Structures are given as C-alpha cells and as structure tokens.
Length: 178
Length: 178
Image 1 (cartoon, rainbow over the protein chains, first blue to last red):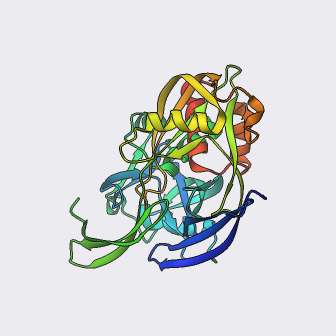
Image 2 (tube, rainbow over the protein chains, first blue to last red):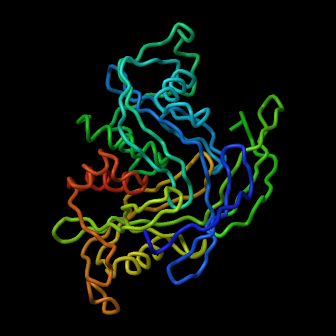
Image 3 (cartoon, rainbow over the protein chains, first blue to last red):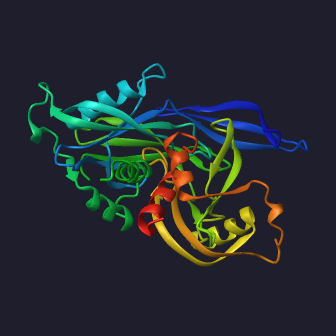
C-alpha cells in the first residue's frame, strides 16, 4: 500500500492486558499523523455445543461497560507461543469444567481493526463432557445454556452485544444449520 | 455486581483516537488489581444494500494488521453528542458517495468488551442513490460490491476477519433471508 505507511512507533505504556503505542504514519504527500495502537497477544473463543444443541455461555462483570454480560467462553493467550487451540481447550475447562471431543476452527476474527492488533480464533466444541477435576456441574454458577433461537433473539433485542459472541453464534447457526 | 468493583480510574494517556486509563478494581476479599481500559467515543457502521442485493464494502489500509482490509463503511462519532444515525449517514456518503432512502438499526455491538468502551451501532441502508455532490461512481475507487454468498465465502476462508463486518453480514443475511 503506497497511500500511507508507518515511519515510527513509540511505546507510550506497557499495560497489564496490552501495550499502547503511538504510531507515526506518513501519507504519500509527506504529511504525518499520529495513530494510537493497542498491541495485544491475541485470544481464543469457543462455541461449546451440548448434545441437546444448546450453547454454553458465561456471565461475567465487564468493567468497560460497567455491567454483567453474557458471552461465549474466551481468554487471552498466556504468551504469543501458546496456540489458540491450546488456549481455548484450557479456557473452556477453566470457565465451564468441560472438555470436548472435537474442537474445530469456525472464524478468524479481528476485534477492533481500527486500533488494536487483537486477533481471536473462534472455535466450535462438540462432544462435551465434565472433567474429573470438575465433576460437579453446580461448581460453575455463572455458566448458562441457551438454544440458537434464544441467542438470536437476545442478539437482535440488544441483550447480547459482545462482538465475538454475535459473530460466533451467527456463524455457527449459518454453517451448521442450527 | 458484588464480586468486583472499580475503586479508582487514572488517565494514562489522552490519545488521538481514544483515551487510555488504568482502572483499580477491588474484589470482595479486598484484593486490588489494575485493569487497562480504552475509552472511545463510539462509532457507527452500515450494511449498504444495492438494488441488485449486492453489499458495498470499502478497501482500506489498517495499521494494526499492516495490510489492506475489506470492511463495511464505518466511522467514529465526531463527538458524544452526534447520534450514530447522523454519523452513519455522513460516513456512508463520505466513503461511498451514496445516500439511502431507508436506514434501520441492525445490531448494537461492543467491539472489544474486555478492555474497550467502543460501542458500534450497525445499520442497514437501502434505496441507495448517488448524491449530487458525488455523481460519479468512479470517484470512489476503493468501494467494491459483493453478493451475500460471496461475502460468506470470504468470511469462512479468512479473507474477511473484521469483527463488525462478519457480524453485520451474517445478521443481515439471517434477518433479511439474503
């Protein structure tokens, strides 16, 4: 791309979740602009499908929107060396107590392409079973299960606004005729 | 929510696209954690549907991913006082030269709920016509049109990874049987 290019990058702050940079961009006519960029390790998310077809979601408090949200299980990679597959197998068990017989890639996803490098690989998990470490379903009080039609209703009425959950549920419904 | 609450917020950097804060969160047991938060004015996006059913997208260079991307038209609000409806009517004309007879809300969308306040209202625009200010279709060389099946193929093969474009195309397809 010749129209604009990055000529400098400065770390403004090394954060806890991500690093924050100011990038100096130069257009073809020589003008320079400062663009903010979030540099993020990347993450993984999963549509966990129970044998009855219902999808597991997690309730959690989200500080940016100051409220509880309903989202598919997800988490950051521990490091850039962790595969998103390993990351989501780990996060699924940590958040729901389930392991899956089959975990397949559904979507490659960039959350906030205008200013963040965050890439989320979104998987579908089937053949769910409780692990021995977490045999009790009641241990995970914030895990809830909904059918695809129930989830679509919550997407279209604004109850679910999380980007990855909307994209994942609609892609799963479309590709698996669910 | 009683499990965790914000007890302090400090501005780390006033950026060009957003402001960057460190929030101090306190859990019920009294432990404190620092969480990074991006505070963003919010944005609007649109699925512009031509009379032949094809959808308009914009090609542009995205610095975080260092490549050209294909996205539905979108833009930030000029200020928190601008409605997302006014924002998207403005952005649609600026980016494509089109105005629409009918603009309706499709999705309320939070891009990166873990660390950003960015909320995007995603609309559907129909009845497109070139404005007098932009009568020439060739003026907008980076605007391209694809059918819904073509877009789904590009979503599932990873050509399109932008969160709002994936969610918007799949929601439009689902709700309008397109």
